[in-house]
Image 1 (cartoon, helix red, strand yellow):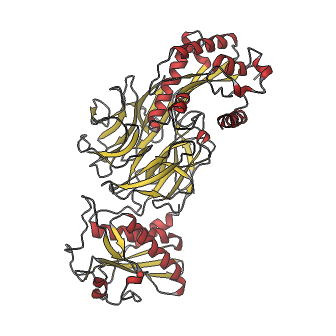
Image 2: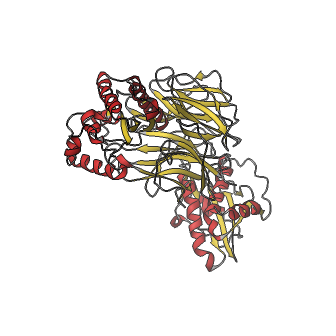
Image 3: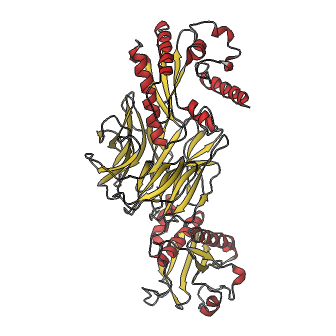
Length: 442
Length: 166
């Protein structure tokens, strides 16, 4: 919303202090997250030092967000402050490694927060306690005072990426459908929030059904399906201005389930005409309609590979819902799902290495992942109704909708690591469904 | 409990859609929900008669969109009524139960609505009087998450509009 924050943030990431001694491969302090981490790494994150009384509160709040980000991954365990032997009261003072070794902190994050005029200045350092050295250089972020949460997430992203060698995902947003009212007449409206549930903002009212919002590659726009006109149609809106526009549509048809192409120029979606649903593309400004599948089967839920060359989608051409991959321009499709049950809502990982999907089998729903060639299928969840996976920008975490059964059944968002560990509810003010994760913000 | 829920549903729908949309929850017979519509029900040209005496909906088997014998009979009666009451147009709404993914259910509901529409056309109803829309699993009628409820949610409902007397 406040593009100023973004600009300032991007401009003011700066190295601070002396560049640390070349600590490129810091022996012990390296978390390999590919195989899944069973024992989280102990980390100490003392309250960032406020340089003035005015900075006290924001320093505490900001530090807490960093702790929540890192422990929320399941990869880190926070060492509580009452176990500390030494306190960090001066950001520039040398760290007494033995005090942190004694309490078994493998990593230590220290920081300082200054409020200067209309600016928030945050500096931080990451230490490899057992190596007795700093891990990379200290960094500084500058933002407007309202940007403190984003700064906290940026700090977390830096810590995460230095320790794991992977890009983080904390400075990101989620667009979703907020749900209220009884199950038979659910009120739905679009909402957007930080990945951790903070800063919820509503993008539409609940006067008509809205479904399946999806971010543009730059995170600035959202495609979604709305019943505004009485039939499902594709809308696009600017997140900053909350201004929406209905994309043109052939009369007498329904269109739904849109996604952007990776270059942001094309919308891929499902179009139903005469009861038959196929996959089409069009320009983001409407026009240039192209049909990519035909035949009497249901073809829906398309998603591009990150390089834009291929499309994964679901079809019941074999008799049941299964996953297929075809070239971006259409043409012959290869079936990739062969297990027991029905497969739907495939989404290509931003890393390109996996496809997440919803599977129905034995009366249960699962979120799973498989390689793009269909090998290595793994189910991550099981419940009465799990569906609609979306990828964290680093391709390590999946968010999805879980609905409970019965008259009081409600939809909620959950996240899970792609190893199948760390299943967590995502806090939302009301019921929530159809999450889509944004790219990492700049 | 069930009756209470039905009553609430009908009231809500009536308010929202100005009475052309009342739900006959039993899909044909047992028009219990029509209390208070007695005089309209005795008028065979009324929308209430269409909804409750003719039957405004047909039901489908799991993951199917083909019409059952019972569905054809109901649609025969619908077609006859529509052919006798030419001032009405209708939207056929297709629905699915909650056992499916959102997009697939939208497409499945569209198949069901279209099957019903095509059948009505084959029985002489002009195509330009019949539009279709799918709600997928977004508007279940019964919410118990058991097959007894799912069976009523897998439906195509012919919703009248227009008409001289509304």
